[in-house]
Length: 530
Ligand code: XIL
Image 1 (tube, rainbow, N blue to C red):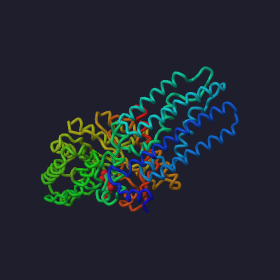
Image 2: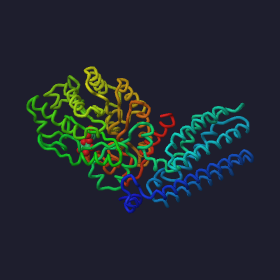
Image 3: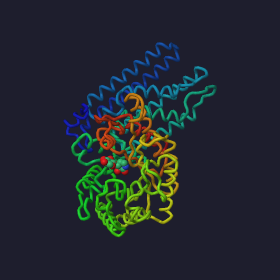
Image 4: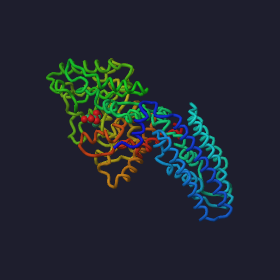
């Protein structure tokens, strides 16, 4: 069943980058900002009164009332706007109220010392409110330098707090960094920040790409899908359309339709394209390639395939997964040279990876060339084998620009959900070889996770945040692509015949905690100076 939001969008005919009615979104944003501004001001007054009368019960009631007003205004504004950009940003005003609360707590928690300490902190809190509101207003007005203005304001705020706090005789309270974070949390989303500025825009400010793998016919038949892609994703990968068996089913027969559709879709929205994939021995190979009898025959096929596909899109596809999954499957026994026992290795030897890279470089010298692999997010023998392959390729002078970490997380035991820090270290290990890295097929299965669905979604939100933060922390990590966008189309359902919920959008196109986890990681990257 489609959500009311989806139906609303369809009624508005909202397809592509122009999502719905801009005036209603702007109105909604203004109301949300006013609610935050009022909440901030009332909260300051409440704190000041508490200092004066020390009546804890009355204080708690006042704080509750402030939160209640914020929730109501926010929810009303969202409902009236009826637009995905305003309606699903923070889920509801409760999140905004909680942020307001968290911002105040961040300043006051752990504070001890004379009343004057509390007073000094409450005074510090006023500029916090002002910065949050001013920057959100600038964002709402669409000022092109709004993000930079916010970053500068946060830096100034840090400086001011550092200069005034801790006050003499006071301990605990806020650090300059906590204050800056509090501002970001408080402000984020008030102007429809997540919504007027999708994930792709925040990621672009960080110089990274956020993308999704797509089936073009699914996008064409689902207006909400098209709208969400255009709004949030800055990169597209063909989930199947560019695979050998699909695009080149016979030696002399090409089927470019779906691949062309993916590239056209991306060009309409100014999105980057990742080409996936030229040579994949394990799956979706046409019979004539799998059944090649001699090295010469297979070499011919490979040269023709790579030249034909890469040159068709030369200059329009930014990155190619030239070889996909060169290692054996995670459950297969290891092989003597560490490579998967497929037709390419059998007939051409392990040098096929280098050959494929050279063919791709010739066909499009501008494309960044990747080797893509699964299960390499954690250290261990599998990652070591892949590392060895990459080192050998670089030593041989092969034109290799990057490594794709598939990141189908939660699928591979025993390290089911490797920590963000582990993933970050793995990314760095490869980046230290002087190449790029990307997370190319991210999804987080919940199949083996205990608890009810909301609990599992909350876990997934935190985990998405940690995984995206791992990429953000490594400058050579150029982007994150999720393998699909909404749970309703995930390959984990169709491929394994199970019901899973691995993606940032839910079955009714609602933004899940996973979406907000991605967004939080990107925003924190910006706060940390990108
Ligand atoms: C999957 C697609 O999502 C499915 O639709 C298809 O049936 C099989 O392939 N690793 C990869 C991707 O590199 O190409 C795979 O895509 C998922 C695992």
